Image (cartoon, rainbow, N blue to C red):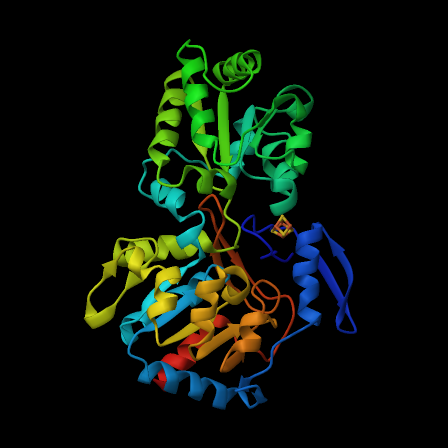
Length: 407
Ligand code: SF4
């Protein structure tokens, strides 16, 4: 059995057989996982300096030389790396006095921090499968982003206390700005919110739960929603980026809603983390520094704040090491342009805009397929995996260790 690192569900039941350098048979991979695995055979990176192919040792030596001479390096990415590579990355950041940050800094970090500090009640996905009779997909669309979420955990499977499952025992509710694939499944309980309107919708739910008339939404539907929530025995909410971006700094309102729901019944939260080991990075950083991301180790001290986020540091750093991420495609144009002006070191199994623009490219093995390691699933469960394909490529951890040794 293989583990899929295509998303933070880390599906553990993947069967894959290879013949002549291609998959001859795969089982249990969703379409997203299939393209993730298939990419092993296309667009792979090779060691490069300034666009010229070099051997791996030279690429690693050049990366070490650039980092050693940098005054304010940024180490960014990490959410698509194993725990072992992330731990080595944090040690490298300490050694260099660098800023280190990951993608959670501008996506699920704000919620994950509350989960890890115990402000927001959480559970495992196995609990959801066994006990949940109501699941709420709020600003998230697992049918597209985590295609096996509904079938393995949140809607279709039979669980210990949910033997009748979706046919009779599970209700799914979708809150979204558009009728997504998941919202179509939850069509009886799809609630459209205006872009940026999630806080208003939360206030409306709080109002109906307290027996007041809601100020927004279809009043009849809101009362129906309140009745479903009140009848719930065990509920789970899966917030996606739609909710996070809409609420912005108003997460206290979400905490208030959860407190109210938990006065009535049980409601837990699992953030819909995208990258396969974002949560692992956040847990490691919290343990090491007291903060989940946005940390600078400059002058041997730990400093944290928005000025140490990748978005800010991209404009002030004098070099960046990017691992398993493509910030030049994903970050806002101004940030990407600032980053592209610096000498970039890209560690990645596959070609991307960032590897194409990098001064140094170091190819790596694909975790789960070509390299083993450990990762933390979106719900905090640790998953270990072994490679299923032999390769001469180094793992992320080995590359970071080699760079550190060379420094
Ligand atoms: S749901 Fe995610 S982890 Fe599971 S097979 Fe699909 S991409 Fe891979």
